[in-house]
Image: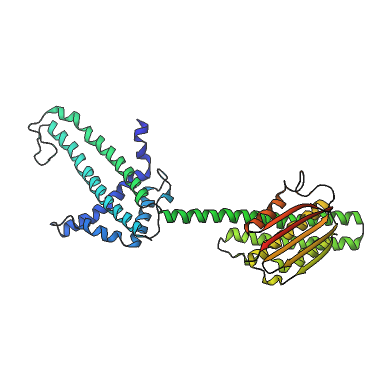
Length: 391
Protein backbone atom coordinates (compact mmCIF):
# COMPACT_ATOMS: atom_id res chain seq x y z
CA UNK A 1 0.00 0.00 0.00
CA UNK A 2 2.79 2.40 0.90
CA UNK A 3 4.45 1.68 -2.46
CA UNK A 4 1.26 2.55 -4.33
CA UNK A 5 0.98 5.87 -2.50
CA UNK A 6 4.68 6.75 -2.84
CA UNK A 7 4.16 8.92 -5.97
CA UNK A 8 2.17 11.34 -3.80
CA UNK A 9 5.42 12.23 -1.99
CA UNK A 10 7.15 13.30 -5.22
CA UNK A 11 6.95 16.93 -6.24
CA UNK A 12 6.94 16.08 -9.95
CA UNK A 13 3.69 14.14 -9.55
CA UNK A 14 1.92 17.47 -9.03
CA UNK A 15 3.98 19.62 -11.40
CA UNK A 16 3.35 17.13 -14.19
CA UNK A 17 -0.38 17.46 -13.75
CA UNK A 18 -0.08 21.24 -13.65
CA UNK A 19 1.94 20.99 -16.88
CA UNK A 20 -0.97 19.07 -18.44
CA UNK A 21 -3.40 21.80 -17.38
CA UNK A 22 -1.45 24.70 -18.92
CA UNK A 23 -2.87 24.19 -22.47
CA UNK A 24 -6.33 24.01 -20.92
CA UNK A 25 -5.91 27.53 -19.58
CA UNK A 26 -5.33 28.80 -23.11
CA UNK A 27 -8.25 26.78 -24.44
CA UNK A 28 -10.52 28.00 -21.62
CA UNK A 29 -9.72 31.62 -22.38
CA UNK A 30 -10.42 31.07 -26.07
CA UNK A 31 -13.72 29.26 -25.34
CA UNK A 32 -14.73 32.22 -23.17
CA UNK A 33 -13.94 34.60 -26.05
CA UNK A 34 -15.43 32.52 -28.89
CA UNK A 35 -17.46 29.53 -27.64
CA UNK A 36 -18.49 28.50 -31.17
CA UNK A 37 -14.93 27.47 -32.15
CA UNK A 38 -13.39 25.56 -29.23
CA UNK A 39 -11.15 23.72 -31.70
CA UNK A 40 -9.34 26.88 -32.87
CA UNK A 41 -6.29 26.54 -30.53
CA UNK A 42 -5.57 23.09 -31.99
CA UNK A 43 -5.39 24.63 -35.46
CA UNK A 44 -2.95 27.34 -34.38
CA UNK A 45 -0.59 24.91 -32.61
CA UNK A 46 1.08 23.55 -35.80
CA UNK A 47 1.99 27.09 -36.82
CA UNK A 48 3.52 27.77 -33.40
CA UNK A 49 5.52 24.54 -33.53
CA UNK A 50 7.27 25.73 -36.68
CA UNK A 51 8.84 28.65 -34.79
CA UNK A 52 12.35 27.52 -33.68
CA UNK A 53 12.19 29.26 -30.28
CA UNK A 54 9.05 27.35 -29.29
CA UNK A 55 11.09 24.16 -28.95
CA UNK A 56 13.38 25.85 -26.44
CA UNK A 57 10.44 27.17 -24.42
CA UNK A 58 8.75 23.78 -24.35
CA UNK A 59 12.04 22.11 -23.38
CA UNK A 60 12.56 24.49 -20.46
CA UNK A 61 9.01 23.85 -19.24
CA UNK A 62 9.49 20.10 -19.54
CA UNK A 63 12.76 20.16 -17.60
CA UNK A 64 11.33 22.30 -14.83
CA UNK A 65 7.92 20.64 -14.46
CA UNK A 66 8.39 17.05 -15.66
CA UNK A 67 11.93 16.10 -14.60
CA UNK A 68 12.67 18.44 -11.70
CA UNK A 69 13.39 16.04 -8.82
CA UNK A 70 14.89 13.19 -10.80
CA UNK A 71 11.81 10.92 -10.63
CA UNK A 72 12.23 9.82 -14.23
CA UNK A 73 14.69 10.28 -17.10
CA UNK A 74 17.65 12.60 -16.75
CA UNK A 75 17.10 16.30 -17.42
CA UNK A 76 19.51 16.04 -20.39
CA UNK A 77 16.92 13.79 -22.07
CA UNK A 78 15.04 16.97 -23.07
CA UNK A 79 16.67 19.52 -25.35
CA UNK A 80 16.57 23.25 -24.59
CA UNK A 81 17.88 24.58 -27.90
CA UNK A 82 15.80 26.04 -30.76
CA UNK A 83 14.76 23.90 -33.69
CA UNK A 84 17.60 23.63 -36.19
CA UNK A 85 16.00 21.36 -38.80
CA UNK A 86 12.56 20.68 -40.21
CA UNK A 87 12.59 17.37 -38.38
CA UNK A 88 12.93 19.26 -35.08
CA UNK A 89 10.04 21.54 -36.08
CA UNK A 90 7.78 18.60 -36.96
CA UNK A 91 8.60 16.88 -33.67
CA UNK A 92 7.69 20.11 -31.87
CA UNK A 93 4.35 20.25 -33.72
CA UNK A 94 3.58 16.65 -32.71
CA UNK A 95 4.53 17.47 -29.13
CA UNK A 96 2.17 20.44 -28.99
CA UNK A 97 -0.68 18.37 -30.40
CA UNK A 98 0.00 15.51 -27.98
CA UNK A 99 0.20 17.95 -25.09
CA UNK A 100 -3.18 19.42 -26.05
CA UNK A 101 -4.83 15.98 -26.32
CA UNK A 102 -3.44 14.80 -22.99
CA UNK A 103 -4.39 18.14 -21.46
CA UNK A 104 -8.02 17.62 -22.47
CA UNK A 105 -7.85 14.09 -21.05
CA UNK A 106 -6.45 15.40 -17.76
CA UNK A 107 -9.15 18.07 -17.62
CA UNK A 108 -11.85 15.46 -18.25
CA UNK A 109 -10.78 13.06 -15.51
CA UNK A 110 -10.17 15.96 -13.10
CA UNK A 111 -13.72 17.21 -13.52
CA UNK A 112 -15.86 14.16 -14.15
CA UNK A 113 -14.39 11.44 -11.96
CA UNK A 114 -14.76 13.44 -8.71
CA UNK A 115 -18.29 14.45 -9.83
CA UNK A 116 -19.18 10.81 -10.39
CA UNK A 117 -18.09 10.00 -6.86
CA UNK A 118 -20.20 12.83 -5.47
CA UNK A 119 -23.22 11.74 -7.51
CA UNK A 120 -22.85 8.12 -6.42
CA UNK A 121 -23.00 9.25 -2.81
CA UNK A 122 -26.04 11.41 -3.56
CA UNK A 123 -27.77 8.48 -5.29
CA UNK A 124 -27.16 6.28 -2.25
CA UNK A 125 -28.99 8.87 -0.12
CA UNK A 126 -32.04 8.91 -2.35
CA UNK A 127 -31.32 11.68 -4.87
CA UNK A 128 -31.06 10.75 -8.59
CA UNK A 129 -29.13 13.37 -10.65
CA UNK A 130 -30.24 14.02 -14.21
CA UNK A 131 -27.22 16.09 -15.37
CA UNK A 132 -24.52 13.39 -15.30
CA UNK A 133 -24.27 11.60 -18.66
CA UNK A 134 -21.99 8.93 -17.12
CA UNK A 135 -24.61 7.83 -14.55
CA UNK A 136 -27.87 6.84 -16.27
CA UNK A 137 -29.38 5.62 -12.99
CA UNK A 138 -33.19 5.03 -12.98
CA UNK A 139 -33.65 5.04 -9.22
CA UNK A 140 -31.69 5.55 -6.00
CA UNK A 141 -30.24 2.76 -3.86
CA UNK A 142 -27.90 2.68 -0.86
CA UNK A 143 -25.59 0.16 -2.60
CA UNK A 144 -24.28 2.90 -4.92
CA UNK A 145 -22.21 4.15 -1.96
CA UNK A 146 -20.05 1.04 -2.32
CA UNK A 147 -19.08 2.17 -5.84
CA UNK A 148 -18.14 5.71 -4.77
CA UNK A 149 -14.41 4.96 -4.20
CA UNK A 150 -13.95 3.51 -7.69
CA UNK A 151 -13.94 6.84 -9.59
CA UNK A 152 -11.41 8.23 -7.08
CA UNK A 153 -9.16 5.22 -7.62
CA UNK A 154 -9.48 5.73 -11.37
CA UNK A 155 -8.68 9.41 -10.92
CA UNK A 156 -5.54 8.56 -8.92
CA UNK A 157 -4.40 6.14 -11.64
CA UNK A 158 -5.03 8.73 -14.36
CA UNK A 159 -3.32 11.38 -12.22
CA UNK A 160 -0.12 9.30 -12.11
CA UNK A 161 -0.38 7.66 -15.52
CA UNK A 162 -0.98 10.80 -17.56
CA UNK A 163 1.98 12.49 -15.83
CA UNK A 164 4.29 9.63 -16.73
CA UNK A 165 2.94 9.48 -20.28
CA UNK A 166 3.54 13.18 -20.90
CA UNK A 167 7.09 12.77 -19.55
CA UNK A 168 7.83 9.88 -21.92
CA UNK A 169 6.47 11.87 -24.87
CA UNK A 170 8.57 14.87 -23.88
CA UNK A 171 11.73 12.76 -23.97
CA UNK A 172 10.75 11.31 -27.35
CA UNK A 173 9.57 14.47 -29.10
CA UNK A 174 11.67 17.12 -27.35
CA UNK A 175 14.76 14.97 -26.84
CA UNK A 176 18.08 15.80 -28.53
CA UNK A 177 18.24 15.17 -32.25
CA UNK A 178 20.92 12.97 -33.80
CA UNK A 179 23.01 16.04 -34.63
CA UNK A 180 22.73 17.32 -31.05
CA UNK A 181 23.78 13.93 -29.68
CA UNK A 182 26.82 13.91 -31.97
CA UNK A 183 27.69 17.46 -30.87
CA UNK A 184 27.37 16.47 -27.20
CA UNK A 185 29.55 13.41 -27.80
CA UNK A 186 32.18 15.53 -29.53
CA UNK A 187 32.14 18.00 -26.65
CA UNK A 188 32.56 15.17 -24.16
CA UNK A 189 35.45 13.79 -26.22
CA UNK A 190 37.10 17.20 -26.26
CA UNK A 191 36.76 17.42 -22.49
CA UNK A 192 38.39 14.01 -22.04
CA UNK A 193 41.23 14.94 -24.39
CA UNK A 194 41.69 18.20 -22.50
CA UNK A 195 41.90 16.34 -19.20
CA UNK A 196 44.50 13.99 -20.69
CA UNK A 197 46.50 16.96 -21.92
CA UNK A 198 46.30 18.64 -18.53
CA UNK A 199 47.52 15.45 -16.86
CA UNK A 200 50.50 15.41 -19.21
CA UNK A 201 51.16 19.09 -18.56
CA UNK A 202 51.27 18.52 -14.81
CA UNK A 203 53.43 15.42 -15.15
CA UNK A 204 55.96 17.13 -17.41
CA UNK A 205 56.16 20.49 -15.68
CA UNK A 206 56.02 19.45 -12.03
CA UNK A 207 58.06 16.29 -12.64
CA UNK A 208 60.80 18.32 -14.30
CA UNK A 209 60.88 20.89 -11.50
CA UNK A 210 61.02 18.28 -8.75
CA UNK A 211 63.71 16.30 -10.56
CA UNK A 212 65.89 19.37 -10.99
CA UNK A 213 65.36 20.34 -7.36
CA UNK A 214 66.29 16.88 -6.08
CA UNK A 215 69.40 16.65 -8.28
CA UNK A 216 70.55 20.15 -7.37
CA UNK A 217 69.97 19.65 -3.67
CA UNK A 218 71.88 16.34 -3.70
CA UNK A 219 74.78 17.83 -5.66
CA UNK A 220 74.98 20.85 -3.36
CA UNK A 221 75.06 18.68 -0.26
CA UNK A 222 77.78 16.45 -1.73
CA UNK A 223 79.93 19.30 -3.02
CA UNK A 224 80.29 21.17 0.27
CA UNK A 225 81.10 24.32 -1.73
CA UNK A 226 79.22 27.49 -0.68
CA UNK A 227 79.52 28.99 -4.15
CA UNK A 228 78.15 25.84 -5.79
CA UNK A 229 75.40 25.68 -3.18
CA UNK A 230 74.34 29.23 -4.02
CA UNK A 231 74.17 28.35 -7.72
CA UNK A 232 72.18 25.22 -6.92
CA UNK A 233 69.70 27.13 -4.78
CA UNK A 234 69.33 29.75 -7.53
CA UNK A 235 68.64 27.00 -10.07
CA UNK A 236 66.06 25.42 -7.75
CA UNK A 237 64.40 28.79 -7.29
CA UNK A 238 64.26 29.49 -11.05
CA UNK A 239 62.95 26.04 -11.84
CA UNK A 240 60.36 26.20 -9.08
CA UNK A 241 59.18 29.59 -10.28
CA UNK A 242 58.82 28.30 -13.84
CA UNK A 243 56.90 25.28 -12.56
CA UNK A 244 54.54 27.54 -10.64
CA UNK A 245 53.91 29.54 -13.82
CA UNK A 246 53.13 26.31 -15.70
CA UNK A 247 50.87 25.17 -12.88
CA UNK A 248 49.01 28.47 -13.01
CA UNK A 249 48.48 28.01 -16.75
CA UNK A 250 47.07 24.52 -16.23
CA UNK A 251 44.79 25.67 -13.41
CA UNK A 252 43.70 28.53 -15.64
CA UNK A 253 42.57 26.01 -18.23
CA UNK A 254 40.58 24.20 -15.55
CA UNK A 255 38.97 27.43 -14.35
CA UNK A 256 38.28 28.83 -17.82
CA UNK A 257 37.30 26.18 -20.33
CA UNK A 258 37.55 28.68 -23.23
CA UNK A 259 41.00 29.94 -22.28
CA UNK A 260 43.37 29.73 -25.29
CA UNK A 261 46.43 27.51 -25.24
CA UNK A 262 48.68 30.26 -26.64
CA UNK A 263 50.05 31.05 -23.19
CA UNK A 264 51.85 27.70 -22.94
CA UNK A 265 55.65 27.67 -23.54
CA UNK A 266 57.01 26.83 -27.01
CA UNK A 267 60.31 25.67 -28.47
CA UNK A 268 61.35 29.31 -28.81
CA UNK A 269 61.86 29.12 -25.03
CA UNK A 270 63.90 25.91 -25.24
CA UNK A 271 66.98 27.76 -23.90
CA UNK A 272 65.25 27.95 -20.53
CA UNK A 273 65.05 24.16 -20.34
CA UNK A 274 68.62 23.68 -21.52
CA UNK A 275 69.97 26.18 -18.99
CA UNK A 276 68.00 24.51 -16.20
CA UNK A 277 69.54 21.14 -17.10
CA UNK A 278 73.02 22.70 -17.25
CA UNK A 279 72.68 24.20 -13.77
CA UNK A 280 71.75 20.71 -12.57
CA UNK A 281 75.17 19.46 -13.69
CA UNK A 282 74.29 17.99 -17.08
CA UNK A 283 76.71 18.83 -19.90
CA UNK A 284 74.36 19.93 -22.67
CA UNK A 285 75.54 19.96 -26.27
CA UNK A 286 72.66 21.66 -28.05
CA UNK A 287 72.23 22.32 -31.75
CA UNK A 288 69.12 24.19 -32.88
CA UNK A 289 68.77 24.69 -36.63
CA UNK A 290 66.02 26.30 -38.60
CA UNK A 291 63.50 29.04 -37.72
CA UNK A 292 61.85 27.83 -34.52
CA UNK A 293 59.52 30.83 -34.48
CA UNK A 294 57.82 29.60 -37.66
CA UNK A 295 56.82 26.24 -36.19
CA UNK A 296 53.00 26.02 -35.79
CA UNK A 297 51.80 26.66 -32.24
CA UNK A 298 50.52 23.16 -31.40
CA UNK A 299 53.67 21.50 -32.74
CA UNK A 300 55.97 23.97 -30.97
CA UNK A 301 54.15 23.58 -27.64
CA UNK A 302 54.18 19.79 -27.77
CA UNK A 303 57.83 19.83 -28.89
CA UNK A 304 58.70 21.91 -25.82
CA UNK A 305 56.99 19.39 -23.53
CA UNK A 306 58.70 16.47 -25.24
CA UNK A 307 62.12 18.12 -24.77
CA UNK A 308 61.25 18.86 -21.15
CA UNK A 309 60.30 15.23 -20.50
CA UNK A 310 63.49 13.98 -22.19
CA UNK A 311 65.74 16.19 -20.03
CA UNK A 312 63.75 15.23 -16.93
CA UNK A 313 64.32 11.53 -17.69
CA UNK A 314 68.01 12.11 -18.19
CA UNK A 315 68.42 13.86 -14.84
CA UNK A 316 66.22 11.35 -13.05
CA UNK A 317 67.75 8.16 -14.40
CA UNK A 318 71.28 9.05 -15.51
CA UNK A 319 72.12 12.12 -13.42
CA UNK A 320 74.49 14.88 -14.57
CA UNK A 321 75.84 13.20 -17.73
CA UNK A 322 76.67 14.59 -21.18
CA UNK A 323 73.51 15.14 -23.20
CA UNK A 324 73.29 15.85 -26.91
CA UNK A 325 70.21 17.76 -28.07
CA UNK A 326 69.42 18.25 -31.73
CA UNK A 327 66.38 20.27 -32.85
CA UNK A 328 65.95 20.85 -36.57
CA UNK A 329 63.16 22.68 -38.39
CA UNK A 330 62.99 21.24 -41.88
CA UNK A 331 60.63 21.88 -44.76
CA UNK A 332 57.90 19.47 -43.65
CA UNK A 333 58.94 18.13 -40.27
CA UNK A 334 60.30 19.13 -36.90
CA UNK A 335 63.02 16.73 -35.79
CA UNK A 336 64.00 16.45 -32.13
CA UNK A 337 66.68 14.11 -30.80
CA UNK A 338 68.07 13.70 -27.28
CA UNK A 339 70.93 11.27 -26.54
CA UNK A 340 72.76 10.50 -23.33
CA UNK A 341 75.02 7.68 -22.08
CA UNK A 342 73.20 4.75 -20.47
CA UNK A 343 73.70 4.62 -16.75
CA UNK A 344 71.87 2.22 -14.44
CA UNK A 345 68.27 1.38 -15.32
CA UNK A 346 66.80 2.08 -18.71
CA UNK A 347 64.40 5.02 -18.48
CA UNK A 348 60.82 3.85 -18.48
CA UNK A 349 61.84 0.25 -17.89
CA UNK A 350 60.97 -1.81 -14.82
CA UNK A 351 61.29 0.48 -11.87
CA UNK A 352 62.05 3.51 -14.01
CA UNK A 353 59.91 6.61 -13.85
CA UNK A 354 56.26 6.18 -13.11
CA UNK A 355 55.78 2.88 -14.92
CA UNK A 356 57.16 4.45 -18.09
CA UNK A 357 54.55 7.22 -18.07
CA UNK A 358 57.11 9.76 -19.32
CA UNK A 359 58.03 7.81 -22.46
CA UNK A 360 54.40 6.88 -22.98
CA UNK A 361 53.50 10.56 -22.79
CA UNK A 362 56.13 11.39 -25.43
CA UNK A 363 54.69 8.76 -27.78
CA UNK A 364 51.14 9.99 -27.15
CA UNK A 365 52.07 13.60 -27.86
CA UNK A 366 53.78 12.63 -31.11
CA UNK A 367 50.90 10.39 -32.19
CA UNK A 368 48.26 13.08 -31.53
CA UNK A 369 50.09 15.36 -33.98
CA UNK A 370 50.48 12.63 -36.58
CA UNK A 371 54.17 12.15 -35.89
CA UNK A 372 56.28 9.32 -34.53
CA UNK A 373 58.61 8.80 -31.58
CA UNK A 374 61.39 6.20 -31.32
CA UNK A 375 62.95 5.50 -27.92
CA UNK A 376 65.56 2.99 -26.84
CA UNK A 377 69.26 2.13 -26.67
CA UNK A 378 71.42 3.17 -29.64
CA UNK A 379 75.21 2.68 -29.86
CA UNK A 380 75.66 2.59 -26.10
CA UNK A 381 73.45 5.65 -25.55
CA UNK A 382 69.83 6.14 -24.71
CA UNK A 383 68.09 7.94 -27.55
CA UNK A 384 64.75 9.64 -28.01
CA UNK A 385 64.06 10.62 -31.59
CA UNK A 386 60.81 12.41 -32.47
CA UNK A 387 59.53 13.67 -35.80
CA UNK A 388 56.47 15.91 -35.97
CA UNK A 389 54.83 17.07 -39.21
CA UNK A 390 54.62 20.82 -39.75
CA UNK A 391 51.65 20.74 -42.13
